[in-house]
Image (cartoon, rainbow, N blue to C red; front, side, top):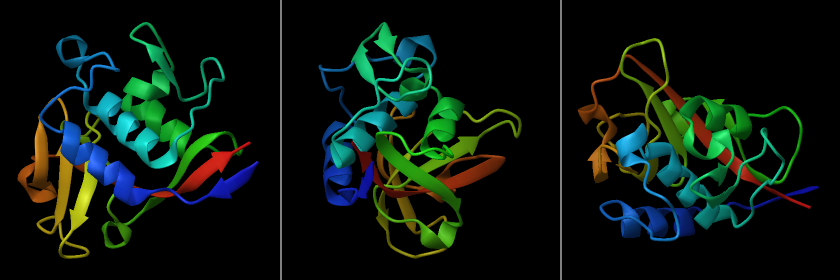
Length: 166
């Protein structure tokens, strides 16, 4: 297993292209719980190019009914990205707002209990400032939206460290 570079520019291009639309290659989960983590996963795939087809604990999408929990579930995506063991696919670490870069993932809790939203960072205009971090997202469709405009109780910042390949 080798860790390779994550193509942040490709992830951001994908985010801008599909922020207000839906790629027909992927099911739109908007009406059955939300599409934000599905969209974040698509952006991660655009920047990494590989999936982990391990049943249950991997990170993959085949079709609307054959996908890993981590492809569409906020907490499951977090668990996959921050996994302790190396496996194929993107990897991340928890970090601070100061280390956010385009292509990284932010997760929000609106109620302070459950993690409910996974926007993708598309620009960092002012490091360390929620006003200066711009995101793209589905469910609450947005592109170049300042993080500060969300009303959240808790936030976690995930810095993509690279992509593991076989």
